[in-house]
Length: 388
Image (cartoon, rainbow, N blue to C red):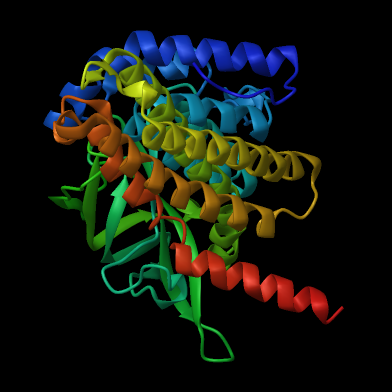
């Protein structure tokens, strides 16, 4: 694999090597089938849990690895280099894990967090709705208290890790009242898979992340115990927003994996493919394409590792996360496009990973805040810094 020297310590290099071998040995041979069948990778998920990938940055007392976010970024990068949908399953699971780890009671952590850290279950986060995407404060799903239960009514969409045989807790956001200023009071709830009144709607067929199971969720008079409130009532939006900057680092890591994978496959193809009597690696126009990919991969890696290191050190990292997510996802889109161009006719055949990666890259420009949203965040932060 072509990569650059990031001055990682030996432990992180070992993590990279371990994940890379796992991805190439266990995921790569199944990747095309998973893509064609749009099938959740059950056996891969179980093995990833057994190897400690799924719970790496979470507390050991609940089955995690007490690791750091730079290391988890590396895990996602290496998985996405081979299959972005598999990597996304870990990324989406981590959002639920963070909410449970940061705000759950000990009993909630034992029951719901531990199984998604060790690979027995997979967590799903239910925030997006048909009429509330980036505008999370506009959600309309409601929960009302009746005695010792909460009763939930509403719908969610674009929910990763939903609808599988191992989907564990679904953490959803619902309106529980109104604040004095008239704004909605939003709370988070843990809804176990199989709860009466909780059903799956249609399976969503995507241009990318096809092996990442994505369904609509429907709640009709869904009753859960009062103890399934996550954290304080009314704190749901604050809890969820607190995870978003971390999520942007992780989405950026998926993009970096796609970028590096596009570079690796392009170089390999250029060395073996011949045209007009010589290897296409001799053509300067193609040399320039891979040179740009390498520059962008190096820059994205530095930006992502810096943002993750700030997260580990407890330093402000929201601006760096948005910058890294914006840069990595847009350059991944460019790289997957150019990789198809380099492969020519073969690049549009889905048995080739470069074709499958193209749809994955487009998804990354949308989730965890579109490129436009990232530019708004970055510019506002810059302007606010000028006022201090």
